[in-house]
Image (cartoon, rainbow, N blue to C red; front, side, top):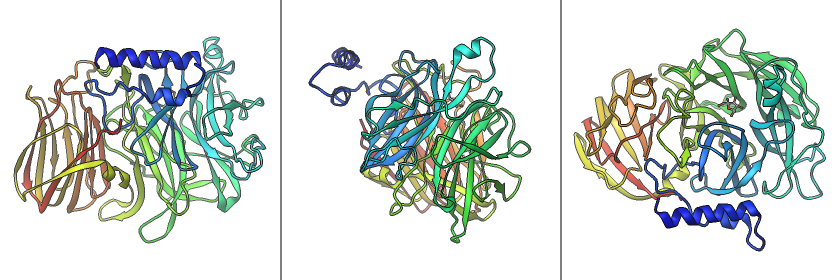
Length: 502
Ligand code: FRU
């Protein structure tokens, strides 16, 4: 970043901190942006500065998508958690807003969700103004340091002005810890079918399901998952939602993040498909699957209150892995989000019913120039290191390489039944012993009709057949990749160069 820009940014942030009169903090925060650093994502959300982990409180209200996130504003490593905040009207370009939730006497603010309380069940609203309610974990580190085990409890905060100002509920916490160390990450939804609020909560090695009429009083209904699914680590950040499959049948999907124990080591998100009757989730089978087979998609959850006329189930994950999130080689900021993805359920050729995820269609609005290439091997000099690649109807094996002037490269190899991302030579990797690795994922169809790869300054996201198989991987090349080679046979290929979103 150039010096003047940095100065301006600092001045701006300082003024915001002092609550300068006359100019709204919002306006000031969006003036100058430090978005020119090496490895800085150009089409993905990342914090203006300092540390970010899980997406929180994903909610749509009054024309805006709200993205809150785990944030340490004082350091580029994990620490006392706040909820950072940004809004977007199209899921692609984000506007930073001031921090929404600060730590208080009950603790720091861990992960959670947000909903619009349309019927004012909480009584927090006013006539004509439904409250936006955040349900989050208060993490009391002092109590933990004293040796207590009940230091995580669930609390509420609400906003009556489109998420700009937040009031903590004076009856917090609303769900007390029953004496268990890992008791966090409430994801709340209004379930019309049952006329109730449902909360799924991560409890060490399983999910508790609670219900409520007013978000303040919660009753435990059932537990899920002690005996099934992956159990290589602690369960975190669950989500439970209804989705129709491609035959129109309605199913329920339970997402559960786990750390460690993912398919590539460390963090990952598993899912289960089944039925939910308002109290109990019954999976169709004991088998679990992974929403993403790459190393870098964790703690992802879906938006609440997407209007019925839109009807999509939209997901955002944290694009990192606890194995190295604190030490990746960025300084001004650390970590970002995956591209927002639309989820769908399909009956696949080889994998039964699958949860697919593909980039939201709004991303195509960010494309500024499209270049098509032939039906066979191609070598392309790249104009910039953020673009989306699309290859159709692939015959047999295919390999893709992104290479830079340092001869660092990341390679993607498509075989008949698997896809491999090799980042062993992709660039800087000395920050972690496990980063430089080859990762493999299964394919669920015999034919690859579409391979989509979204490349940004420090990441690739690979979507096979609109997301039957997905791999999200971070990369830290010493200089931007500037050549793409494609080897294989296919019907057509194209690159869409994207507009930077900041
Ligand atoms: C997941 C997680 C959550 C917790 C938050 C703390 O990455 O560990 O379980 O609420 O991060 O920042």
